[in-house]
Image (cartoon, rainbow, N blue to C red; front, side, top):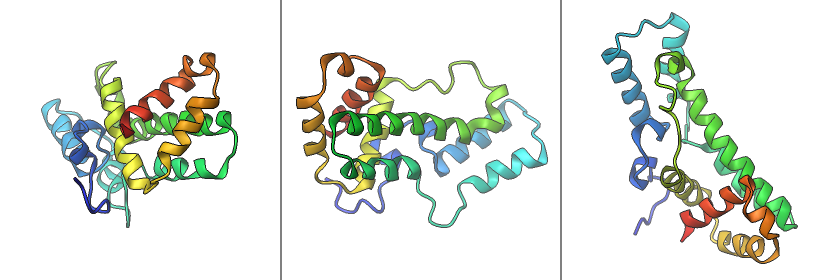
Length: 165
């Protein structure tokens, strides 16, 4: 049981180092650059070196803040749309971190599978400090159509539900 969520990292949740978006990812990027003998521009190197050095940097911070907004909306479709936006934001965050190296990586290098996404969502849920998340998920489950649950929006709902349970 994790008692202090301020210290938890994506690695603690079992997230692959290329998706941790912290120093695990930074070190992994440096190894990729070294192994593949990649020559980056000064600007690209500066981006990689400075990305994780922001004061109070938290991996997936924008996704965490987005999840917190679920309590501000009232309909199940609004709530599930927040989960969808959060999932999209996770992907965008990963792509942004790897942008300087994307042209040197295999095509499916940054593909997230469901298991990895569950771990990332679990990290986001813990960092969001939302004990009422189960109530929001239950509300969505009970008042959303089957069609919505089987769509791409529903995929993120099911994945975040897996991250909670």
